[in-house]
Length: 303
Image (tube, rainbow, N blue to C red; front, side, top):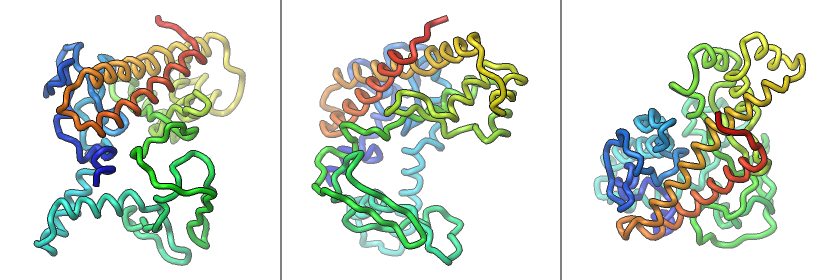
């Protein structure tokens, strides 16, 4: 259970989800204060301290952490009624074992269940394979789910890889709400490019979906349609505008968010569990380093 307590944010004290001041005290509203920071990454909470992104800190129900909690509560409500002698602690442990070791799978020749959760299967002992970004071959076919590994070892550092070429940062919030005008949002939705936007660590670039979203913000409708059709070359002014948007609207706010979170974590007292604190510091350093590398590569400037 200790591994879970160090790496699963659902088990951490609730105050860690609130904006904290430099002394580690939680505040339940952020207002105009600039000394507050969220120590949980926005990828799991959907909440930001950076002034450009504060509108998103109220979005709770769609963030992964809150979806996970909602799913757990629904499951526990059912199980506790059927098995009243089952303790919450025991159920939590076994629920997490199942939910961290399940894989998406559809049985060939059978109609797939409508509920996505009913398409998950357990794959025993897969968690013993070394957590690395290479060394395992994975195949998902009609014959089944096959994993071929050349090494195995127990993990001791949660589920954050020290080096992960597949690491990425979700960027959907930067193209939501007040961050994007309604016409651009409708265009992206109609074209199938609204959402699932990401920054990829291995190549220090945004994914193509994000490139499309950036171009929709910097090009007029006519030139954006030409871009989508692959007709005509991107002119220098468009390249500069896209670089400035990436630099000012995405990379700098993310970098500031990471630096503020790290400062607050370093100053936080013993209220934050040591394992959770180490996990968060490691993850925020990864985020900061990814963004800093991108800033070096992409350049750009403030406007």
